[in-house]
Image 1 (cartoon, one colour):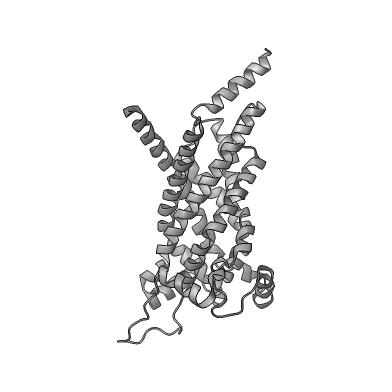
Image 2 (image 1 turned 180 degrees about the vertical axis):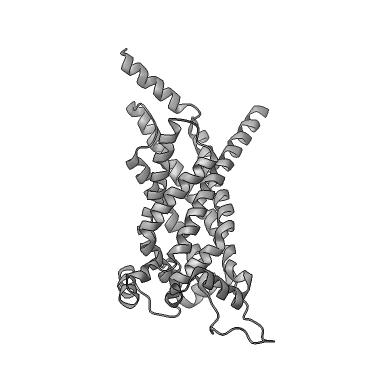
Length: 329
């Protein structure tokens, strides 16, 4: 056997150390990644939710897109109180946990498939290539969109809701009670039909490019760093932030269109993705596609950074817990 072949086999053996073996073990590892992703999403979403509220309202209320983030926050607090910044938090936490669970499960399933293919092909490393990372992201992202879109339609409706009048509530008057998540869901189904829960699916599927870019940048930078040393949760924090900054900046116009489509139907005509694009550009100019980009990019980058950091930490805890359970058997 040649020296080159031995070296390749040694590298392959090193790269497979710690890899789950067997279908059951791989399935367990996929679920561990999914649970860690869901937990990381919950923590990161709770920390940054007020920025989501500000960004979403700026996207769906074009007049307000011109005001500063600070003024928008003051207006919401004055009219609705501090709780106004957390409108829809309940559905958002449920949505992000389900979204991340589904995404990470399918991403890890696809990753495992490519890693097995790399082993069979005799590749020197089972690390995903750039193309494989993009394919894994596309599969996971598409599955996530189709499963979780109804949750985000309800959340966007709740987040974007506002008082019918711009005037503050008169002294002694009782503010209108905000609808619950279930109430909003039932209202959409009753008044607009089940199909409305899938409003914005097309731009959402286009937006699969966002996690594709984000996770491809993250994975490739992580692979480079792993050649030098072990990747820590702090490293994951910065790599996740960088990946999300790039992805959100590129795909933001589609994010705006998706938000507009989620709230369409109640106060205006139903539109497809391209019609919404043309109308926004015609009525508001190209700047209309970037309404609320400041708080959105800030929120997205911070959320992604905390998500990757929390996920890595939670996954490590899960793996350690599984090892302890296995030792007791």
